Amino acid sequence: MLRSGQLSLGPCLEVFEERIANLAGTPHAIAMNSGTSALEVALEALGIGAGDEVITPSFSFIASANTILMNRARPVFVDIDPLT
Image (tube, rainbow, N blue to C red; front, side, top):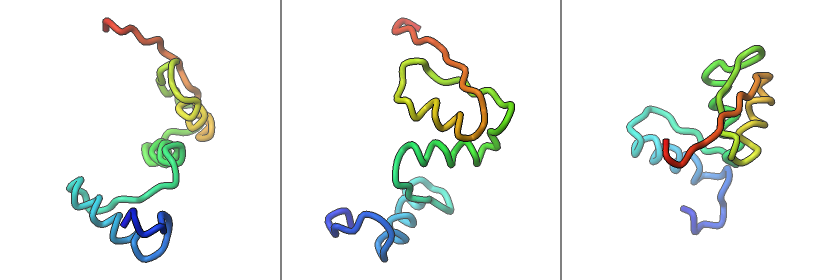
């Protein structure tokens, strides 16, 4: 499927989602266009919204914080320590 040259929509998408769902042992899977979109949908599915605080690492790709802000929540940055 990935070699088809058609990586979004089209007849292969539904088959791809079904195969991923089967592999993950879940009834449904949704292919997304990017990790940022997937993070945004995941936060929305969890009911994260206005007034919520979401803990995220301070050393991360900007999408980690941006998707929290896009859902009108507040990112709370935590530091990372390689020993803990």
